[in-house]
Length: 427
Ligand SMILES: Nc1nc2c(c(=O)[nH]1)N[C@H]1C(S)=C(S)[C@@H](COP(=O)(O)O)O[C@H]1N2
Ligand SMILES: [Mo]
Image 1 (tube, rainbow, N blue to C red):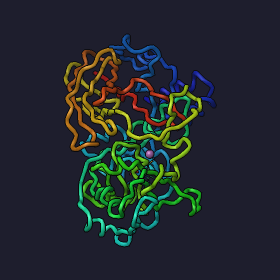
Image 2: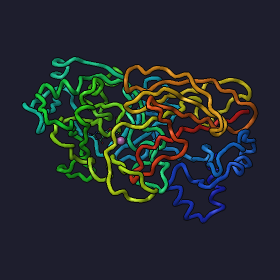
Image 3: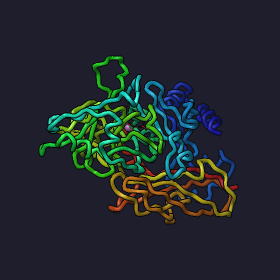
Image 4: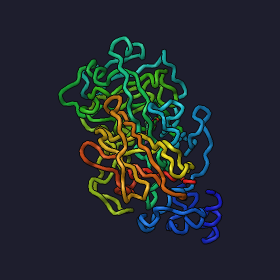
């Protein structure tokens, strides 16, 4: 069906322009398509169509191009292969705990060549560290308490594909999120082992990955978090994921994990931890990297000042049924997914089958621990044959809900937490 929609699209516009649009945009090749036109195309009714906002593009028309596959992660969509970046379709994120084979991959450079756990060493230093130390993975395991938490990891650019005007970078749709379990030691225990001076401001990482240019002197990415975030009980130096040694592709043998913040603070292949007396100034801490306008700007405008992204906003996914599923008219079926809210917790998830005109509350579970996503579930019944969209919207403990449309445009396309929509067909 995707193909024939694209063929129709080609017919009604300049082929070169259409090809360009397809290349540029994976989800919005059909800008301006009306729901009425779509109903005609489907040859099926759109039962709540009259309630839909004017100009709404049906989610079923967001054509996704089939991607190549990663051998160890079947079903993930590859967005780029150098460096490797791959995201997870929503229905493959249905597990309560994200299996390793279904966790997205986001690399800014090339993974290190050698990641031998036995010989791995990293240092703890920086201006505000009294006595720099070097540790092996065995030292960490022996010297510090080992803890396991389930922690969400979401790329700051998750949802970027929807921004208009379009922004550069990997065109993530909804799949740069996962919530596996992580085992390691607490970052605070490790920095305390070097002795933290009172003037400490930031805790940063350096990693062993290689710059795409091949220039060994160029840093790929080196970010961090304020001391208060680093000192939280759940902020880890992790050497295991889902009970197995941390895989190379996810930063093995050692990575930082600071749940609820943009994934870029969770450094992979850790070679250095720095206790800084200033806000860290490593690669991708400045300019528009992982920063958003301090004050909202009009789409396409440059802001006067950028602010570093900290906690991620409230968000949710429908992980079952799969997008484009067929269901039986009148028969109740389970709709479920996850919701998460950065440093906050989720207090409510509501689901709509009539383009947002009415909402029903879902059952919401408590998280496994702080900074873990929460499962939600509800029963839905579709009254008559036709095309429906299921929309899910979460609200956090500060009363903030997801927007229905794209939130504040920003130059790098971060923090899109618009409500997730899937298509279902009742027959
Ligand atoms: N050393 C290093 N750490 C890194 C990155 C990287 O490119 N190099 N990418 C960051 C970004 S932007 C994200 S979203 C997460 C992705 O982690 P994952 O690939 O394990 O899913 O790792 C972060 N840590
Ligand atoms: Mo990221």
